[in-house]
Length: 127
Image (cartoon, rainbow, N blue to C red; front, side, top):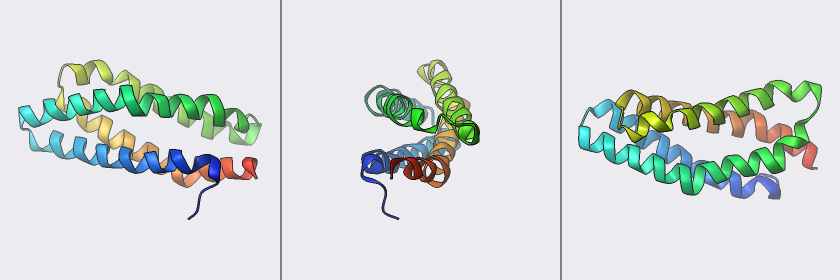
């Protein structure tokens, strides 16, 4: 599916996020402490350089387009997902495998939600 031009860069970034999510899930499932710590560090770096700026662009530039009653559930879900991913960062700094597993699963679910529900709703407002 071809995305609206305003969403194409964010959609491409979703591919990188899904790759990161899968790496988190694999490392957490493997129970290798060094792999878990390395994956946690990868998440922390990605959050600082890619994911947090991605979230900010969505929240600042796109979500205001959905400020109508029918879209409230989409907005609430997006903000809740972003918040929960940020909340996991202290546990990831400590190298906790359960936090890594949750981060990976939540990130993958969030990306799929955005691609399947949020972005189509935004495209209707962008056209």
